Length: 317
Ligand SMILES: [Zn+2]
Image 1 (tube, helix red, strand yellow):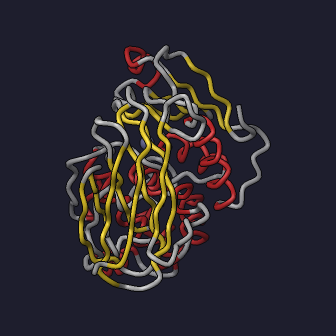
Image 2 (cartoon, helix red, strand yellow):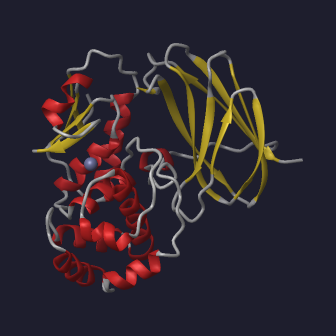
Image 3 (cartoon, rainbow, N blue to C red):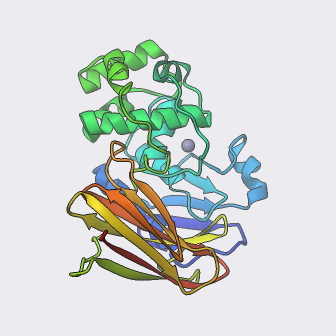
């Protein structure tokens, strides 16, 4: 049990050694980002799948209310993002709350579609497409206007505020009309929900060193190990961060000591304008164009089969 997170576990399923430390670090980093002193740890309950209706009503995976986060997965930073922003006094309408939790934390939404932003903000509903669309808009606002102004806007609005209230609060906090922000957002790229996450723990790690011939690192994945996170849908993972100093064509090679499906997912950190997100399976090589900048590499394998997964990255010949 760490300093920032108090975990209650009702689920009897396996929890990998790195899951609670990872979420503890996540809360620490997010509180720091929001300039928040946590007097009390955030409370997270890992609940049984069949109990989700009891705790979370209509929600499928988890929820947050009354200062407690609930989840049917051992790791669900989306709910922790609700908890930490709530402690920081952020409120916001339904869609903004959900969009922010998807940018600052992560949910497992896939197959989502970007909708017209104006209708999404007006309708204030919490379906996956609306959340994903708002999350893109939130990322855009963070880039264009910064965290402090967004925080001011979130503190000034509440769950069921109507659009007139939201528009007025928006203009007051951000200094531009919400309509002009919608217009500017229309040319903002549509990156995947995965690439749109801020990945604050993953991207905040000390970057791996480069050698004269490139970068090579081996990660030991074993659910018993205290640096391995999961399981998430039978996968276990561990992340590293790396820095690419020049734009160029690179060769990525991944190998594994296990026959189980393993691989590395390399994702650009920082914004949605450089949506580089490459999955390389163990036993294969890929040539990819990478822009200079920070990346996070997620090493993944099957929960049942511990493995050493090696990533090699070098300038393509
Ligand atoms: Zn949520």
